[in-house]
Image 1 (cartoon, rainbow, N blue to C red):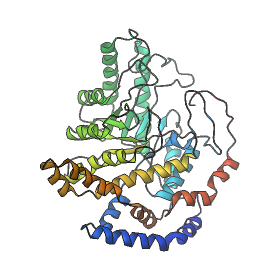
Image 2 (image 1 turned 90 degrees about the vertical axis):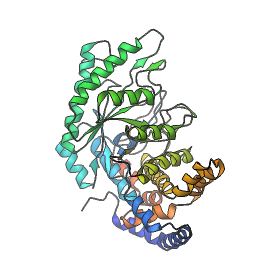
Image 3 (image 1 turned 180 degrees about the vertical axis):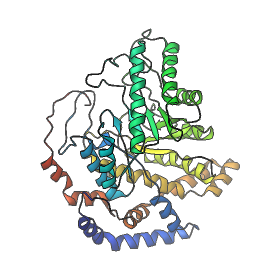
Image 4 (image 1 turned 90 degrees about the horizontal axis):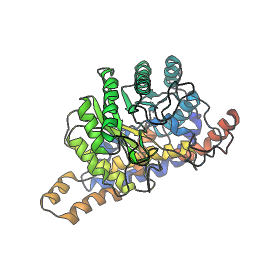
Length: 430
């Protein structure tokens, strides 16, 4: 029996107020879908089994390069973060695992594992940090980490990743995500080829240390903090890395790490086709790496990404099990509410993609009927699947309306009284 940070009675009371309407909406949607020979129960079962990991860092208030404005009741350490993550899963029943970031979340693995288990949580991919300097580290990452010109700095970055693997093994994690901020800010500052060679040498050392049942995710990002060139700048370079390292190496796609108008769903299709799609960091963006809430700006694009994922699932692709994680920065919202909303939007896109008439779509494609192919996708996307999402949550013991239930619980005010206020006025994201 897991520990509930929000009283079960509050969830039950909130659900009771909405249950009659929910049952009516679910029945009406079921009848509508049945006319298209779609079994709503089958869709609901699949949605209930779809999970996404939440990031430990996501439950704190983020910021920009210019300023950070702390929120109320911010977590003081990883154990507070786990409490907040427990609330998200309690209400959504969609986020049973947490992705940790080392050294931010460094603590006794036994204590971490016990705390997570008490909250009904497990651990997803580990995340290393060689894009900022930790207190008392010997060598600075100001000019790079795994690709640094100094061998001792590169070795330090490798050793940090090896430490992340060992911590992850103790926690039951099965993957390591490596994102570096290495690059250059001026033409001529770095030799592109030698820089990339140094990066690959370091990644080979990390790859060799992976347990047999682990995966290594490399993550690309086109800019920031390096603004002229970035070592792992796009999916093509990312694919080269995964191919070079071996069968346990995969590409991680962060939806916010692409230039505007990039066809991300096609990138996903390519990586699926060649067996190198490792997983996702879900978020949304407008101009660059904004890390907005998933589905807040381009929900149709999120649906199109899931259309590719469900297509691969429909084809029964062997060994296809991408990792699903959220990676967001919450500057003006309650982080818990944003993560609840994002988990719901990700499940929504999955449910909508499950409704696509694959037979009809393939027929329209084979006949070059562009309009009807597009309409087939839009028909699924336009379907209001909220009753399915709510029913999946309700049956699993979650909340029919998780944000409303969270607000009714008074959780934020409670933790604000327990956790000392953080002073504002700081520059930068941390």
